[in-house]
Image (cartoon, rainbow, N blue to C red; front, side, top):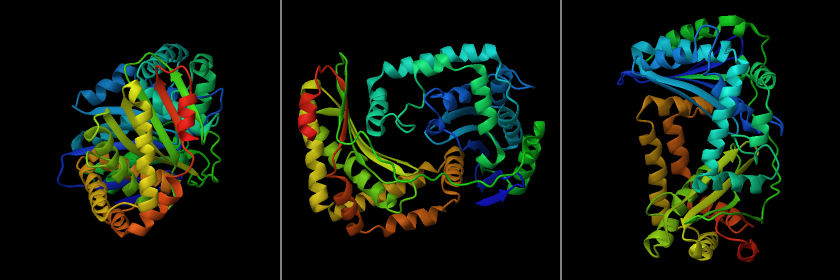
Amino acid sequence: MARTVLPSGLRIVTEEERSVRSAAFGIWVNVGSRDETVSTAGASHFLEHLLFKGTKKRSSLEISSAIEAVGGETNAFTSKEYTCFYARVIDKDLPLAVDVISDLITSSVVKPDDVDAERKVVLEEIAMRDDDPSDLIHDLFLEKYYGDTPLGRPILGTIESIKGMSRSTVFNYYRNRYKPEDLVVAVAGNIKHKKVVEMVEDALSKDNFLDQPKKDFVVRKSPAIKVPGKGEVTLLDRKTEQAHIVYGVPGVARDDKRRFALSILSSALGGGMSSRLFQEIREKRGLAYSTYAYSQQFAGSGVLSFYVGCKPDKAEESIKIIQSILNDVAANGLTVEEIKRAKGAVSGSLVLSQEDTGSRMTRIGKSELVYGQVLSFDEILREISAVTPDQIKEIARQILPTSPTLAVVGPFRSTSKFERLIS
């Protein structure tokens, strides 16, 4: 892995892999839904859409066709804390990918007509999420867990905020948030670092983008966040065939060294077909088709969640099983075999996920942006291997018995029976 910091403060990280014939190029922006106010909720994601609508030298069609004409792919995504624009192409076409994606960052015009047209698209995306309870449940959970705070608001924004967002609001957000010191360029594949730096400098110099007054990048920090929704239930009464449930307890913040122990604990609890959750809920009892655990980590906060989709009349039983599993692991820890299996699963999935250049680009870009450094494969694997049974037992004891937050979507008129379960 190689790293260069330009005089403007922009950082470039690359990972060379000579055995492939592709290259993935990404620009990571240190802005997400967490940076929005109530009135600008959804602005980061809205802007992600709008930057593809046209620049000073390319139309929307020219942006997409330029990459597709060489067999590549381009896209973007927005999270709570960052936005990423990327393209994956054959290695010889990397200069094109650099030019196209950089053009979006420096020279998008955000026309009023495009704002109005894309507003409808985002509203359709919100409607699509609302129509899918297995997707909606996760936003409902975070809304209850974090309350009316930036972390609690959905990345897509609300119908009200998107309808009320003007072109000037979005454009000013673009100009104020997309600064060199808040960008990380990540490239992985059959590339040379020095050539990448030259290409990036040339492409991002358009419109004097790199000539802005330099500011030092600061890794996003946040004090410990008080969780207003802890110990509460949120219910969306809907006539669905399944009840969708997310049961969550406090996790760890992004920079917490216990995150490696938590990843092993999460894998053992609900990371695969051999996990406790899957075995107890699906294999032994046949209560659900889909059930899993997942951990989310942010600056200053984190959450460990458990999902299950089951028949409505099995919802209470499923929640009780989750509680039983968590209480048992909190009291007795995991078995030696479970820890060994979970360590292997976490390590193996990490290695296997890096078999393509897109995943490698994502790992180094995200790491540089959120941590200010990139751990090597070997360093991460050593951290996972070094986690002890006592460390896993201790974090399980600390977080699993805590008062949970529960989100439910299904045909239920009252939260009372669910409140009794977690009280």
